[in-house]
Length: 446
Image (cartoon, rainbow, N blue to C red; front, side):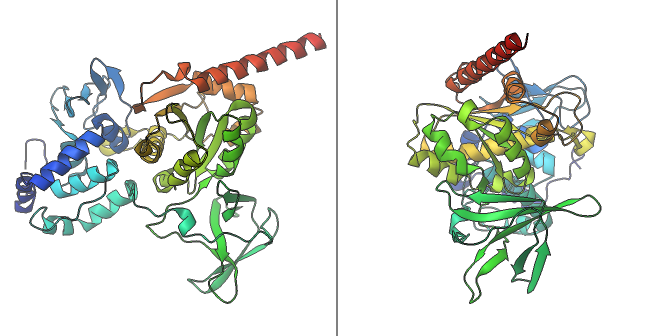
């Protein structure tokens, strides 16, 4: 055992370290470090918030309990170090992954490649120990579930068949029948909500049906059009691993863009997106509300390439930075390694920002991301659908969005601060108008 209680490196593990001397592996490591800010990687893996400190950022150490931050990260050097008594962990992004997951070099390299949105190289056993990778298939499965950020996912439109315009659509409160060709059965349900996933041009790709079980739990079914058999009709949709999921809310993109655009607000779930669109109508606020299919856990699997294509088709100015706002549900922290609290809201925000930035920055768009913090004292899981039910107005939602925007480290192009952006000024102007309207109404009533 090592001094920190980690297992002594196996012969295969030592072979992996020696393979780092291979020029191909060394180039890959350099490429990862250039594409992946260390603070971003640590925040996303450990679910912690890093605050600016001097030339770097700091946080409470994810490897031991402490109340005063002693864990420092310097993105300029790509190194981290804990100055806490008795800890002393230090290293680069690969070492952090090795420490966090008890992984060998090969596994750390694979995960770091995914986190950096780089294609996985085809490496033989002489480059990275194949036996070490094979021995940890279970570990890889866990990591892939947590960090499935494959940039080579096929667009959703290539998999889904457009629904014909003259087809009757499911409606809330009405019984609906769906074919399940895999299990050779039919499913009947009475949905409480029906969410239509449409492309930017308005064509219907699929629907998500929500229903509630007797015990109060909610469940969702994805249905699309199947015309491959001799009996076309609605069919259960199962997305293959290599296909991205469509984005909900892009049907508002053309009208939003024609009005000059503004900010893009990502929330968690279709119902919350509809509430966001009601509270922050894009026609007035410049906010385009969207969500990813499958909720927060699947935000990395969303077809963000569709957003990139939409910007290109509507000739979005590359010099004008895109304000991307992420409003997670008010999920309570989860307990991670060594009892460390994982900020699930921050993890959702960073996963979303990284996935969208990967699509937009590669084609030259400037990108700036912020997280919207929830109101204090709300119950776990609170979202904008709850806010709408509680009587929030557009003014209240805009005021909260303005006051509780926190820039995400690593996703600010530093063109301007969020409060100085054109979108920020538009929010200020709209709030001023709403307040004037309230003053006028008050004067009339008096």
